[in-house]
Amino acid sequence: MTNKSSMLAVLLGALLSGCASDAQVQTQLTPPTNAEVCCSDFSQFPYAQLNDNEDLKFDIDLGSPVGTFTAGNSHFAAFRFSDRSGEMVVTLSSLMIDDSVFAPEAILLDENFQPVKTLKFEDFKIRASDAFTRTSYIERVRIDASETPFMVVYTPADQLGKAIQVDHPAKVRAKEFGEVMPMVTDPVYTKQLGGRLELEVQTLKLRPYRAQPVVAPAAVVAAPVVAETKKPTTQIRVQQETQDFYISAIQNAVKSGDVPKALSLLDEAKALNVEGAQEAFVRAVNAK
Image 1: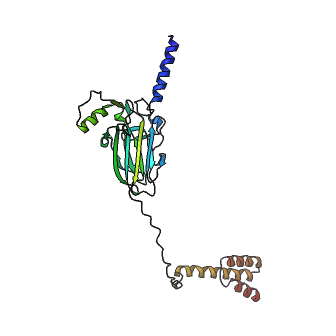
Image 2: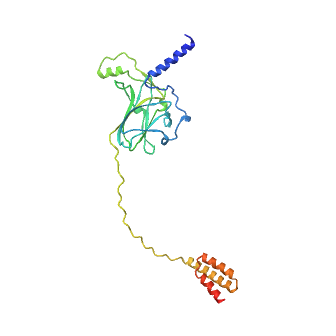
Image 3: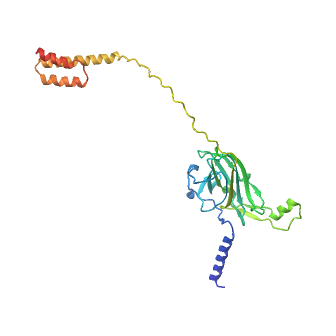
């Protein structure tokens, strides 16, 4: 077989092995860089809306967004619980497929996107496979969605590349039924950047809805009669001095025969609302 044929055979083998797996898990183990981080805080994360009750499978891989967490950068998946859900049970599982697994952690956030509780990786138990599911990490928690309406799932950077050996399913069943322990090899899984997860949401109590209370119209209260306040003494004195000035100036202008000046002073007095200016002008003209 030529080198080109050998290379083609290797590529075809890799493709077929990848298609045979029911989860396309990335094998890179280096945490995402800061340049790959999509959002600066939890309020900017893309959240998927959940129903009152959910049972879904989803993948976290290199195509998932990247966030910064206290445990390091990580690809993540974010969810928003239903507005109808109150008390509920949330079950999060991470499947062990082929030789890899996603080591999960989850943060529960309040309505202001502030962390309230963290489901640490150490809290997850190992569930052995059975006729319906694979071996997986699993954690079940009871929460109130009205207090923590958001959840973000990610993996701690310090777990990447670590290996875990679990009992072979045949061993688990033999222990359970007291049978002879079979000669099997326990599988080993490496904690990777990506994996397949399952999320189950079961609403136990709906969130109560309270309409806005009807407020009785306030009784009409007659507005109090406010007594007219007296003008300050200083203001009265200034007004009197202004009045005296214009009346005297108008009279002197008419007496000296400078009627245009008297009319100009009269216009200024009217603009300033000086009382008696018009009468003073008329009396001065008649006297002349």
